[in-house]
Amino acid sequence: MRQLNAASVIAWPSGVDRRGGLWLLSISATLFVLMLPASSYIAAIPDIKTEWGLNNSQAGLVFSAFLAGYAASALLILPLTDRLQPRHIFVGSAVISVVAHILFPLLAQGMLTGILVRAVAGVGLLGMYMPGLRIVSERFSQQGRGLAIGLFVTAQYFANSASLAATGALMAKFDWEEAYLLMALGSAAGLPLAYLLVRRHRTEPGLTATGRIDLTVLRNAATRYLIFGYSLHAAVLFAVRVWLPAFLVAVLVGRGVGDDAAIVKAATYGGLALTVGSLGPVMGGLISDRWGRPTSAAAIFALSGACSWLIGWTGDFPWPLIVAIAVVYGWAIAADSAIYSTGVTEVAKPDRLGSTMAVQAFMGLLGGIVGPILMGLVLDVTDDSFRWGFSSLGVVALVAIAALLRLRYLERTDGIVRKPSGRAS
Image (tube, rainbow, N blue to C red; front, side, top):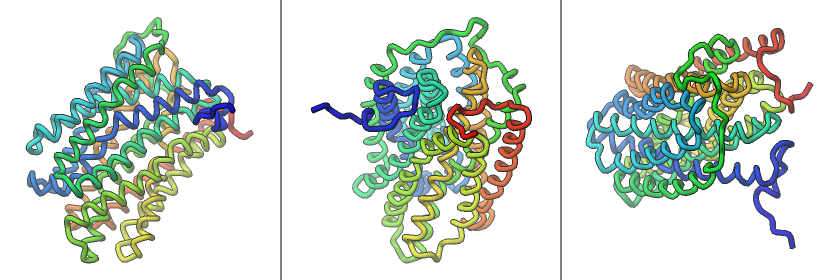
């Protein structure tokens, strides 16, 4: 009897054969393993705030140091992929990421050391995630590119969500340092897999590429709008990742649940909600292959905005309903991510793709840095009012929808965005 595997039972689109599909599943699974401790800090925020004496804004600052390292290193690392082999950067950065996460629970003793180690971890994530996206985009034709990039991005989202849930579960038995360390040590298993999967991939260096950042890529209107949309997406995404578990803790404590039990339960259910929502990027990629990048992203942002306006007011709702809304929210904040990344690979010049992705990562993640801090400030000013904190993210959604509708108009009138080959006519 013919042996079946995951790649043989999935109906891959034209341009993705079974061997390519199996490789795609494997590299996505490897990224998941490498990112096992990605949300361990978020799960531990309540304990870390108490232990280190931090307020909400300071806790958000430690989290955002990770994104700052990610964004700043983008300007140096990603342009190098136009001249050097992305596979070398991918594997080397994976080592940096694993080591930094192992060191955080061992060395970080307060806000300053926490910021330093998490910034290094951010450098590692950038160097494996974005070059990984480039490798995936180069292996698949544009007809299946939305799905391929969507699956890789989904692995990243799924890792963040599963990390939150698993760390929360471990914290029921261990201190936060021990739970974090166990997750970090587990991520080391992804290192040999990363090397084996990309060791034969080769990118042709750009003949005119310098290996330095080229800001002229912003002259392309589609690139500007895609990066702006990505920035607002990141602001909402990371704000929700940081503060949704805290909101669930507040709801549970308000209902008489003890502090320790509330922290564990909130991390578990928050992680579960975001894990289910992590299916969003691959679904968003498929949707945008069919209906176009700007239209799909605007529709998804509309759903995200509706959830932002609603969830902060649900404190008195039945617990299962709150979790259900959180699941929808988790899907909505994730589903448009692959759309921006796919769109950038389509509009960029091949020998400037590294620079274009660098600008995307840097300017886009600025939103991710600011989002958690600003929501923390709103919570501080409004005396921990999650109603206003999440509602502020609804305002961000309105701005994003306006920008994406403008991009759709330019696509239809000027043809500045390449239409997906699978899109309906």
